[in-house]
Image 1 (tube, rainbow, N blue to C red):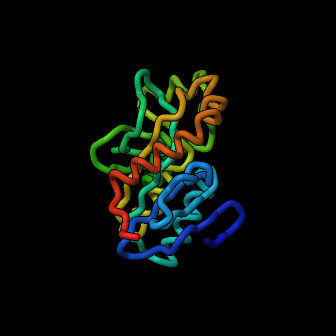
Image 2 (image 1 turned 90 degrees about the vertical axis):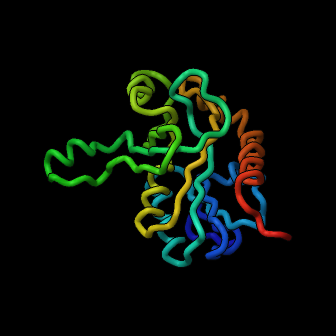
Length: 199
């Protein structure tokens, strides 16, 4: 194990024949298989982008798989979902394009799957949730940053999110109460969907 900076931790060693699992918080990584490298970034886009970019500058994995929890922006969403498109909800890409004529925060297409909105504000109901639900199914605080860092160096990327709450007024309490169970669910997804080397 190695700490890269405050709150950032690399568990294991990055290898070209293994995926790098990326999570925001150590609690989300608590049940993950120790045979795979895990990067814990800390919360938020800046920390996630910096941690992933630094790790990928030092070594190149077979792929990056960002796993973690996300709030549901629409009714009936439960379980684990693969993200097809990720966008930033707190960056005015249209406004920047109108001013500069270039895109600096366009959505990232990852293939088939739900739409994830990433931003540095925890979504807990109100007008923000309603506005985001028009364009996205899920919300988190790191996915876009992880995807951008991986795409910048052309490392294959997957975003996998477990619905932890309804991104409403009770989101904070709901997320904390179920975090241990969510960690086990994420580890189970990895076990069944990621090739783990023999012990």
